[in-house]
Image (tube, rainbow, N blue to C red; front, side):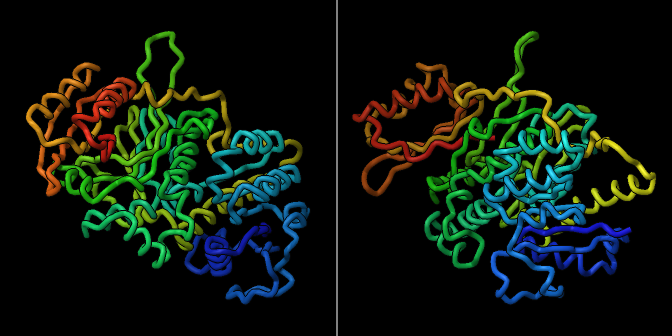
Length: 440
């Protein structure tokens, strides 16, 4: 029983996917039942190392998603359009869809999942978050009996690579970013990675699955790592922390009768050295899940690349093929009934709390005038707004100013920002707020 696959895109992930499907030896036996029928490419003249006849390649991607002989569409072209339109057209034509496109899923998930449910087809997206790390399916299936309280992830390999090298080498962000670009670890335009946008797409997807609701991507607060300096890396190390770009989704505390809200945020974070995420380095990703009754579990591995991401893509294709095999073996006709644990659906609109309502600890680095009473002034400003300080350290700089590093206890972000406004307004005492970073 052969199942035909239409592949949209033959870049890094598309090539890796094709190579797995064309080399079934040693893999799951069902791989042998999968046949690449068509591959959509931008140019037919480009040399390729995929052993398929020229007739398999086409620049007409819409013809692939409407081909009645194709069972499964794999979308790995990336971007918002034409990916969204092609996936919707495939669904409309009764095709199952596998995608690695986190941006399109984060923005259009409700539209895609609603259309898929109506058409009785699957949209699977294991490769959209964490590359080769299996986390989407465990959230939908293995952990489905749990109440997920919090997801904390390092889900962008580029920023993790940069921060790891900053810690190990004591270098500055700009120099290491340029080196990462030269080595191919960062894009020529690194905005989506270093500004936290890519991680925000991914945590929106994970939250939608974990909490069973629609997440408005625009409500995910995101900050990047451009302002993280070598001095902050050094201070964090001396305090027993390492700085990571974390993506967080968690349930807010609520009273009976109140509408439950979620915290959704991406930002640099001081992570205690004894936390499992602190040792996740280089381009690796990790997703730390806290649930009831399972407790704490972590998924770790390579977060990008041809092999890892293609592995996740083909796993989704195999899941669909297995279901189709059972379906055809039972001679099922009429409306298809989807496996509720494998299909994606949104039951409600997730309410996302504004960042001002979140409660966390903060690390602050201030440049102050080196004069008597400045430490007391800083403590008073924070105290005026109910911000309790866990530690405060002052060092002298060569230019005659003082550098003050502060770590707070847990505080509502709104109150913390009020205290910071008061500090910033005092030009006689504070010259600059060099860094504000949250603490896990």
